[in-house]
Image (cartoon, rainbow, N blue to C red; front, side):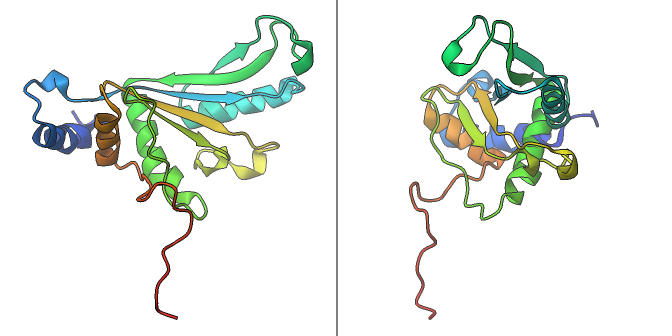
Length: 193
């Protein structure tokens, strides 16, 4: 039982009972839980094989498993796309890998963002949460010296929550640093001056 990820143990022992208490669930299967986490990044149409290999290597280091290279289905001249050209890189995490990634995201990666004031609290309407990271070097697995070109990363956390309120409460109890006041961009003024 010692191989249980820290965040999963935290969910089982503290988050799930707190959700049952606050929401009044009658059945343990009604308690929202995490299903999977999807990671996705786009690759430029003019990227060469070495750049694609570097992005796939970095994505594998972040996720802990080999990514899937997404390819175009047909040619689109306006986007400089050829058929079967690599356009992106994606990973779907489940089980222990999902819990370990979410723990690293919440405890290590997000706090290292400069001038971090929290993440937006808007969910997709079905209890799932998507987050865009503009610079993937916030993850400790990435060595900044080896990065030739920075890339963004889309992170989608899929839950069994039926509503946004349930999903938001689940993520908040797990440690997701939501912004306190939506739309506030500056710190509140004080009379200390």
